[in-house]
Length: 464
Image 1 (cartoon, rainbow, N blue to C red):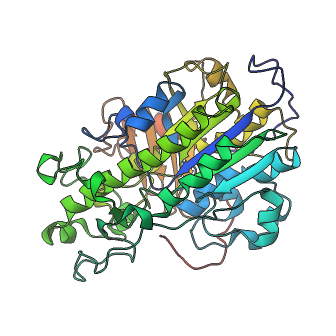
Image 2 (image 1 turned 180 degrees about the vertical axis):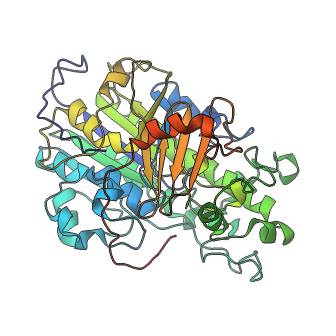
Image 3 (image 1 turned 135 degrees about the vertical axis):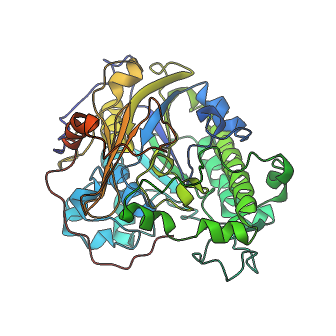
């Protein structure tokens, strides 16, 4: 796949958005949110009223996919426009600022700042903390910081007999101890303020990332005896027809059978759902602050989750895989005067497309470096327009998935494969990769794999 160099575009008038001047941008990121939100219809009984309400005013992309399977590579790809296979950033522990490639790359907030926007941030946008020089290039106002994950449960209710990462725990916590709720004050003040130039405001919500410790009122939404369990996407023996590399990925970092035997699978699901509802409320408060302000009718809103998360589907409890549950994410855009309220696009898109879309919507000049992805403005105008572009997701070096509207094709670094027909098998239960009848399907989808990829950066394999 060749990078797409975005040309200089000045398009505010031609889009029919507003000719009076550039619009503001509210850029909302959610962490580890899978495709469970109610409007996506993948887990009955999930309570996300604020996301549902916003979807009625925006365009939702039901087939949106993350460029990476972990926070750092996925977020960096979105914010820089550089896909993981071109940057060598495949792990959370890869220190991207040490990569000379990024010395000449302007991230989304940097481009907006240099284009005359007032840029602001709060909560988690990048994975980790960019250096002070980088922060100064991107943000006029970074008050509030990146926030923190919810406090870990102490002691962890999951026993040591279950192998797990440090943040893999659940429990209840007082609301005032959760930074996602504290950071809402920054969003409210910023939305209520007046500005002498357009703004770009990025607000990150850490829920539903683990630890799944949430205020009790969100747990009360999900009485344990009322849960749909196991998750609808789980099937016993699902790994039987998968290659060894896939089974290894599925087993990391938690063993489902061990978690179930210890009696903690269902509580984990319950607390994850409660964390989704907590994220939904935080999201709703940010949108409410915007819509009550003078900026509501002149602000583009982009909402995205960095990647998904498994709750036992494919015996997996994480985001480190190339399946639908990891890669299919919530993605919505609202552009006053352009997007159809309550619209839904079934076209397959990538979060890699956000950067070029914002360039076109805001009428910015190209950043001067190649960008992977393409502008979604044609789909914002007509959600059902032709869009023959499958989405690519990178896991580790030379691990890829291509998702078209009908198919998912995975090829691992050792050449092993998975192929799923989403018309008949949306749960990805039957691997068709070895069936010769589908050789042409694989051959066509394989054209979307990169011709070459960059070796991984040196860095620790920090995966939380």
